[in-house]
Image (cartoon, rainbow, N blue to C red; front, side, top):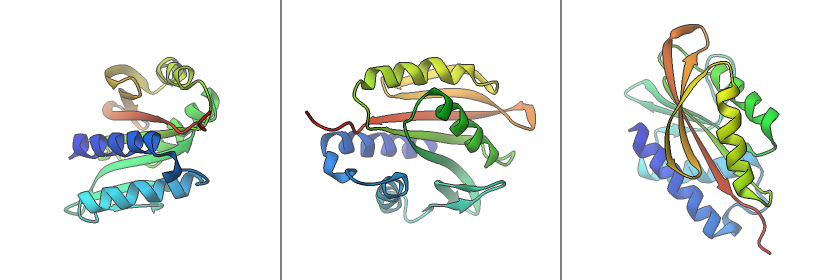
Length: 168
């Protein structure tokens, strides 16, 4: 289910790049709500937004058979330091059983390639990041992270980024 959720998010983001009016003039919550509409239509209403989990409210929370199977945070890209803060924020929401998570960045800045390089370079600098374990496509990465309270427990974290920069 995790890979199907990520694949769906990746497709939604790519459609947003092709149809920028979908995300135009939307803040982070508005973009998250668009993701939830599609995710719930595909996964039969099992995704919620702004859902309390451990130490805060996460943007996307999936439950299957009363068990959390996916936790995600959405951010408008604003640079390296905010990216590292977003990783910390996401890790605060996890219980020991939450091992499949994602960070979704929407970039409105020109020079999207530089944003992707910053994600690729910065994420391994986070103290809980152990390794880049996959690059699914140029804007979709998977990293292995340490669980905050248990270094032996691993968290698989995806980072997806989408180019929503204005047209020229």
